Amino acid sequence: MAIIKKKIWPESFQLIRDGRKTYDLRLADWKITEGDTLIFQEWDPDIREYTGRETTKTVGYIGKTKDSVYWSKKDIDTHGFQVISLLE
Image 1 (cartoon, rainbow, N blue to C red):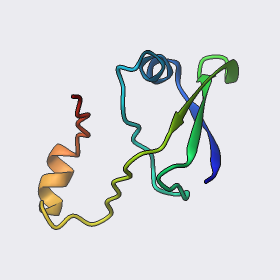
Image 2: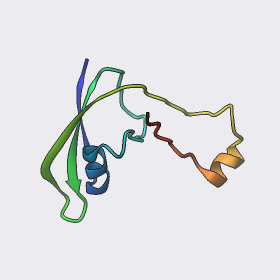
Image 3: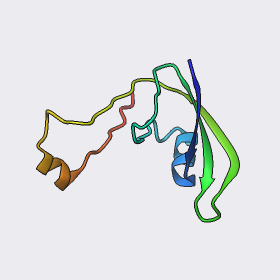
């Protein structure tokens, strides 16, 4: 299991920390697996510095997509994707 640090902007950081945002959408340009530990480091884009705040989460299911067999390219270009968080 890996420990991975990722930069995150304040709005998303606080939502994850509060437990309201139970997913994270990222470009799939790095490796991650279930069970890894993600350390989110809050980044302030206005001052271009880390704030010093961190929150740690364990990675669950990872859904990846590059090519979709469910929707046409036209529909994807028109509407984009939405990620839906599922709560009990």
